[in-house]
Picture 1 (cartoon, helix red, strand yellow):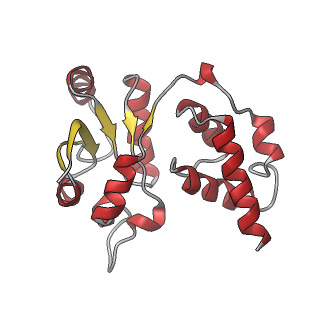
Picture 2 (cartoon, rainbow, N blue to C red):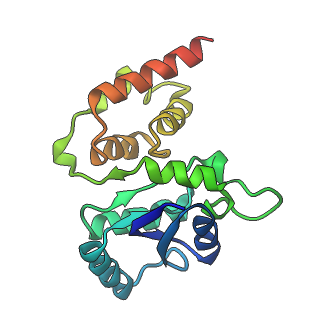
Length: 186
């Protein structure tokens, strides 16, 4: 089983159990969507010594935790699963704890490292031109683009920030838009 050097930040113990079915890793459980100053200080220390991978649920609370950590700790890595990959089989809430070991390993093999928005390659005009904002089906297109690129869903403003924060190259963005256009043409 593959050993992960960095500490994986998850929301709870069920996420940890599922991660450990996929890889050999240490996790830090946030135990909900409220991160204390003590949590942030611990996470900063872990980032300095081992590095962090933020692997939260593809829902509102997971995104909230991801943003809090990103804003407080520069250079963390991010792993994403699609919403449909975290759906419970019977009942419960959407989350990493419902992802298969294969999906988890795939997400951990396709990490994004947070950069600065100053490195922006993609603009709001690019999003509009690609039909990702301002059109009736823009929400679907943003969601599908996030799946193709493996960066999760965001509204227009969030998507733009995420594309640049994760330093998605213009060519990769254009290739993903082209794939999206081809899918819609079928």
